[in-house]
Length: 444
Image (cartoon, rainbow, N blue to C red):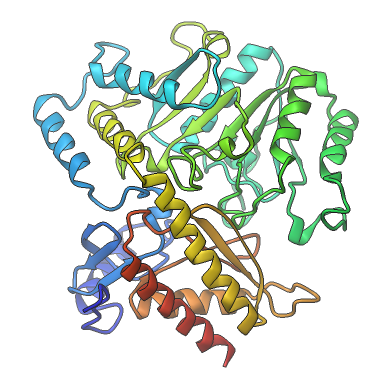
């Protein structure tokens, strides 16, 4: 018997009833990727309110690297909830905040002394990272990248690249934010090819920065080590370390947005470790607390301490329940074999997609880093016209047949794989089989 069990039409009657209530009481702007409503979940499996069971290839959008409801986290949360729910760390402290700050500072890449502060969401981490960088450098300009996603608040929405669905009609936007091309090799903005290009985009970045902004005016460069919502765009080797070198040359704070790539997703605790980089500021969220709202900024102590007292913080930031969850998550991630398993899961998905690419011309490129894998779908391999409708149809077929799947990319034409890294081999194969069926359904 496999994990997937579909006993009703999708959506089932109870999900349909809840969808009607959702449409009545929840704004249309809060999108719904599926018409399904979850009742319970464990590991890499989700059961909906109608009793249907799905294999989860979405992981709550990279929030569940350690799986749904990992028992050590659940037990720690139960214990903490009975002892202390809230005091506000800025009023009365509590051990879990300090213990988590210590653990993350020790786990973060590099040997520099570090400090950490906590907030509620990835967007808040980004906001605070920019604030800290501006305070430290006494500069205002910030550089982000094409196809980047950093959040939906005013500043983070400004940093985010795509107008639809994130920015349309929500302006005016925050000032002193500049955007430059990323190293999207499959769709190189400079028309170059690797390796002949010799990472031309790095020279282009520095030239454009000097010409358009002036390097000495830039407070921070913020970059996702692998672009998430942009389509799991993996920059070529040497690109991130080259960016870091440029930042050092001009005294710019290098901010690594590891909200989606962090906590084991790429086979390392943090994705920048693949290039041996020590960021000046490291932004964390999503999988940090196995589904509880928590995020943070971990950075070099001299930079973090540049902010005056009261300049950063928040009422709920570093909630005690979320902090104990995060401490348990770190124990799981540091356990024997966890990061190796992340790499193994990623390799299995990558090889599966490469096999499909040989069979189905609709797959233009397969790319990934560790357990962060994507397939970019195109109507024609020469023109690279995005296969937008086909991608949406694949996602729909998948959830109707028991697999929760996500799309991404500039045009919504990339299938991305974010299963909990605790997924079993059997669940992985079962889910991938449905994905192949979905792909076949749109190409036959």
